[in-house]
Length: 115
Image (cartoon, rainbow, N blue to C red; front, side, top):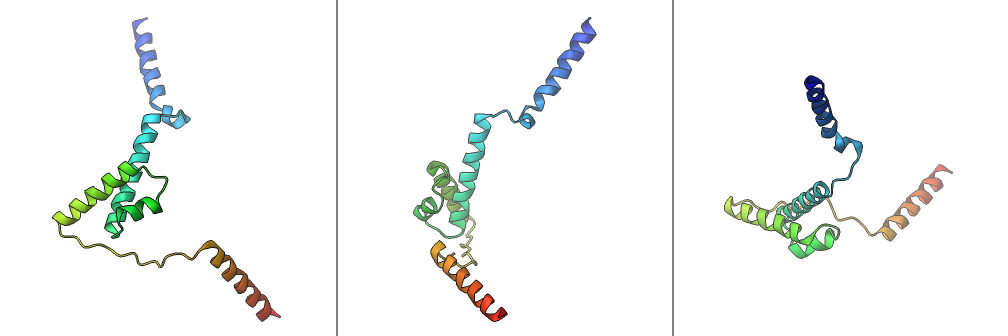
């Protein structure tokens, strides 16, 4: 009897370890992930040389406190280690209306050259 209860206890503990794979929501885990992502966003903004206000504007869904914490942490790290900002190499994207017009012009010129 004692061996079967120990076996049952061990089996149930292994079953409970897989709860995250079952899709059971864990609010604490989700909040920690969201905060870590916001800190990483703030850190990346600082490394790219963006001001904190620009970072808030570019990432409205990220938590402001966590973005600021990541930005400040990276700022302190960069100052201590004399690391320069890395300017983004990709040109800023065009507005959606401009890209729609550009794609319409490109398709019109492609169809004109096909005839």
